[in-house]
Structures are given as structure tokens and as C-alpha cells.
Image (cartoon, rainbow over all chains, first blue to last red; front, side):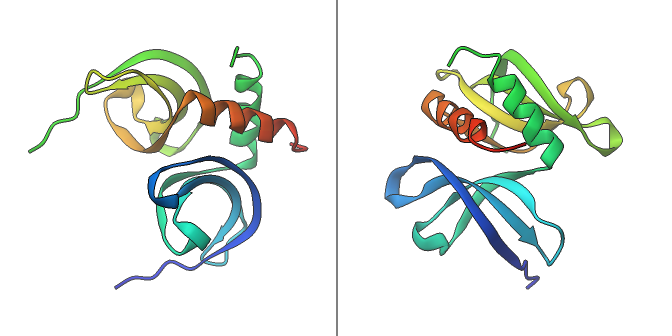
Length: 73
Length: 73
């Protein structure tokens, strides 16, 4: 089976908890030794398993911040 | 094959463009007729195909906004 190597370089924040103790987190992750990208993803306790998520470049995260700041939340 | 019904209720903003004309977007989407959730996802032109993404509750998006506002981006 193919293997994905990753390293969580920074745990930036937790967005929320779901059932079974999983958390949705914003992290800075290096995938396969490449430059780190921002990543929003569900994780099992102690990062033992990863769920679905997306990676975001610095520019995309910056744009997301600008969009959120124009919203009433 | 199982079918997923969805309706993009609001196209809130575009985070960036990737190759082949796909865009990463923040939308408000109703899945299978349920209450809409926020959704960050890659889309082919004119939303003809959807890529990987995540859904976020109102609370999670609010928390994400707070986290981003504490970061230097």
C-alpha cells in the first residue's frame, strides 16, 4: 500500500469537537517532506487517525480570512 | 449508485483558482434537503463537478474566523 508521510508542524487551533472525540483542527502540515500547507481536517484523539479535510495555501487562507471578516457570524 | 442531492444556497466567496479552471470556494450548501452548512471545496467550472472538501457548522466557521484573526497572514 502507498504511504503518506506527514508532519504536523504547528497545531494552530481547534474549530470544534464531533462525536467519538474527533476534533476539527487547523494545522500547518508538511506532506511527504514538502513545504508545509495549512490544513483543516478531522482528527481522532491524539491524531491517531485522520479524516477528510482540505489543504490551503497561504494565499487561500488569507483570502478566507478576508471573506469571513465580511460576514456576520 | 447512491446519489447525493445538494443545492448551493449561497456562493459566499472564492478562495483561489487551481489548475484546469477549478476554484476553491466557500459556499452555503444544503445536502439531501437538510439544513444548509458552510462548505469549503474545490469545484470544476460552473460547478459541474465537485472535488474534496469539508463542511463546517456555523459555530465551527465562527471559531475559524476567530483563529484566523489571531494569526499574522
